[in-house]
Image 1 (cartoon, rainbow, N blue to C red):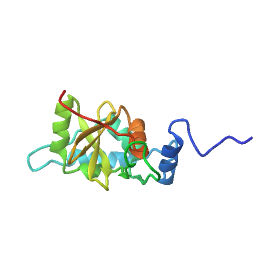
Image 2 (tube, rainbow, N blue to C red):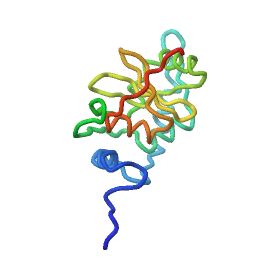
Image 3 (cartoon, helix red, strand yellow):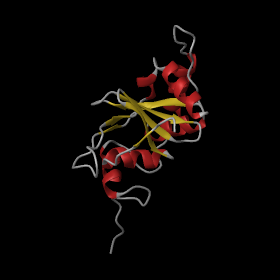
Image 4 (cartoon, one colour):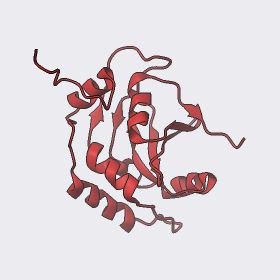
Length: 164
């Protein structure tokens, strides 16, 4: 019997399939592109003087998943699955918004990508935790990029960030 090479143990079958359809594969690592994004974000200053935080967790997420356009199919578990474009430059002009979130969470936050259908901004913090920011509030997607992708692709309801 041949081993099943269509999935990994890292992601569930639906998440793995969505990632592979988008061009991801285990071992994908485009550090050159990640460094280009890091340089672009570091060099950008908002008109009010806000700057982006760039740190290893963000660079690692960009190197592995950056540039992917995920378009999950099928019903979600609790909400509709989210289409994603993992490109941190979607947050280029949101340095203040990300800095404000970082202050509220007592960490640094960097852009990760967007949900094109809702215009939600995806962000990652220095610990690797992932968030979505949209017109309805700020959402916690998971303790790491893997769980965040699972939350978004499979339609798990994320937790709303509150001041409690």
